[in-house]
Every structure is written in structure tokens, then in C-alpha cells.
Length: 247
Image (cartoon, rainbow, N blue to C red; front, top):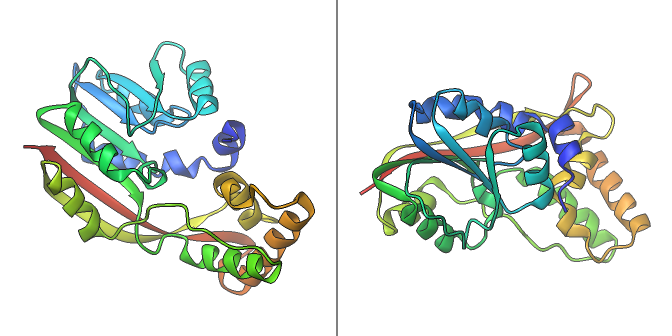
């Protein structure tokens, strides 16, 4: 379950980095825009400052509750991106740091296409192939040494893989960009541990708390030589940005 307060306080970089993605979208007054995977709503509110009519959608009840509390004048919907159905076709769909959580990627692509007007824009950023690879390798090794198995969870596609998926569902790609972005973590003492507690809770569903603590500490310490610099922890992010239109 998402910890919306921890997300907002210590992982604000998720939506702060998304501000430059808004420039790719260039929202216009009066447009209808869907923010898919809106989280706690900060970028939804940023989009609305353009004068656009923006709706935020997220599958997390805690994220949506926080968004509604923070931005009471805006529309937020709790729904799955793979199955949502709204009586609206949007001028644009915007999605930041959300699509890599959605393993049913085919259904998500179909939903996005269905909810765009002809010629409508899709602008997204997500984790790409190789995203947080070092963190996941460290976690996998620590889990194995404690007698547990590691199961991959996220969908981190290559540029070619994801643009091909969008083309399959009727999108035309305008631009696509894959890039490394080392990302500073807020907690100087336990940044890696806190990152896993925020984003990787699903890895520990069947692991006792005392083993979980040992695994996380071991994983973090193994990363210290490479991911701790000048008193700060960093995660090895790789990002994919795409701008496309509905044919």
C-alpha cells in the first residue's frame, strides 16, 4: 500500500522532474487533459495552471485521497489505467513515472488510445530498460543470501519496445528519448532502504520484518561504494520520454 505522505515529503523528485515533461505537452487553455497515474496531484495542478480542464486518475486510494485534500477544487478519479472507462475523449493524456507500474501494458495502451480525440496527444515519462538495475541486483543478492527469492515487478521497456507497442495500438510517435538520470535521494542515512520501503514494498510481502530489515541493510551497504557520494545516496534512474499522437 502506498505511503502518500512519505512519497510527497521524501520523494518529491518524482513530480519535480516531471515539470520539464509539462513543456513537452504544452497544455493550452480550455483543453481537456487526463493525468494518468497522477499520484498526489502536484503535476495535475501544474497542468491546470495553463487554463486546461485537467482530471487526475490513479489506482491508489491513498494517493487520490491526498490529491483531493491538497487540491480540493480539482477532479480526481480512483481507477485502474487498464480498465477505466470515462465518457470523455481528451485533447491530451499526460503520464509521469506511472506506466512502469502497469504490467498489463497492452490494455493500458488501448485505454489511452480510446480516451483520446483523433489527433490527440500522448506525452509520457516512465522507467526504461536498466532503470534502478544496480539497486535491484543488490536486493536480489541480499534476498538470496537470506533464503528468499526475488521476483521482478516493474515493466521497464527499451525505447524500441515501447514505441512499437504504441504504434501497434494506433499512435504515431513524434519524439522519443531515453536517458540516464542519477537521482539524489532525500535521506542521507538510509536513502536506499527508504527507496525500497517506498517503491518496493511488494518484494517483502511474505518476509518477516526482522529478515526484511537485515536484507535492506545488506543491500544498502553493498551499494555504498558506488551510490553514496558527498554524503548523499543516489539511485541509477534510466528514463524514457515519448510524445505521440492518435492517428
